[in-house]
Image: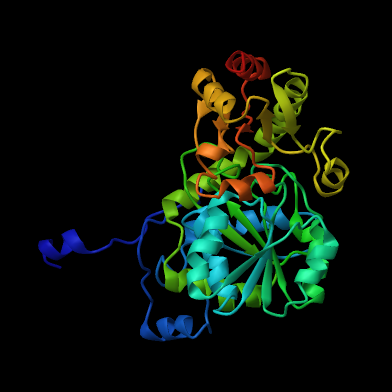
Length: 394
């Protein structure tokens, strides 16, 4: 071999023992042993990697771990597809299971980005969004009589009101009318809530949040209970739309998940304590946290969640928009950031950020007021978190 060629050619992998940590397979494509192997893989006769947009060992291993967490102890087997972000996970699912003329039934108190995606983006392609109070099962039943509704999509607890819906009742009702049921489980993580135990078809996560937990990765995942649905519709949509997750982002998520159980215990304990503190504060009109007995969905959350009620809460300042802005500007210890699920405490004012593009009347109708503050409670010492919020509300 000429020296010029030697500089180009790949050498055999000289690994002698297995790596302790999952490697990053930073390769765009994979080489076949011969043309017959390539043909068999493309025909699905033999499993194998072809191109990292289709599948990648680092990404696949991470996806399998998430699927395992969502089904642990349930006696089920699920299949997962990772994507480039939580929003791309939602987009990919919708692209995979919907067509022009179909409708989506959902709630009005969704994450603002999801609402805008459904109405502004998918709406222009002939997919209509129908919103109702998913806590009112009679309204859900009435809405699902429309045969064009192909998917029921929900969040529980919802972002940012922390309202909860009955997952089992919604999934059963959707299936009875021939519709699929999907849930965004980002707020809870599989450690707190396992929607497959309640009959849903798909689970969405922004893995950027609790699964990664350290604010250094952006990715998403779709977990499906039906292998054929996942392969035929969801994986195909990911492959063709190019919404795949990069190996590096998957690797960061994989390593972040190693501390998920420890982190969630601390998130839950701190959020419970902070919610109880805020509920007694004179500047606060209302605290939204499922762990409080005052929360209207507390008993439902107790049935659906385990080991705590998550690390997310929101509260309403009596002073409205002005008080909300003033509080945000006075924060010192916590961080003003439009994300959640990190180890440090993150504060958000929905009316001026995540829900800025949602009409005010729609926001307020769904409990997202001008004075609402959302808190992703971190794992710092609770006294530091509470002291910062107390001085910010003075």
